[in-house]
Amino acid sequence: MTKDSDINDLTSLRDALRVFCAERQWQPFHTPKNLSMALIKEAAEIVEHFQWTTAEESQALTPEKKAAVADEIADVLMYLVQLSDVLDIDPLAAAREKIVKNARKYPVTEPTPKGHS
Image 1 (cartoon, rainbow, N blue to C red):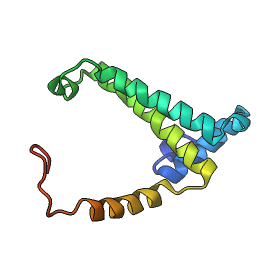
Image 2: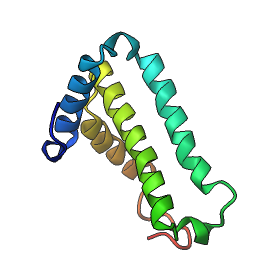
Image 3: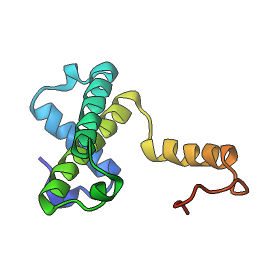
Image 4: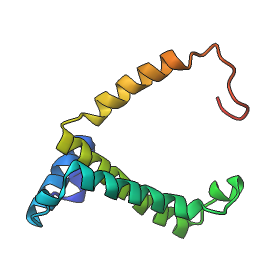
């Protein structure tokens, strides 16, 4: 298994997840369908931490709540990296391309909503 300190970018995270899953023989279960379903379930667990809170409360997490949210964010990231790997999609390249598309779709000349910069 990769040492925690060896995981410092998406490629090393992907490689560590490959090893982790291979050691447990989970690859047959890591289909796009299953990984996307697991991803959305973990994303919903992030939402649970903010359900019924005000905007202000959601920005002032206790250390314990912040650690719990960090765990869920990690789960989402790991499933997303695994899904990208199975589908042979470079998530950073996809994000770069999407930012360009969004820049065309939402040019700077449009008014910015209050509170956003």
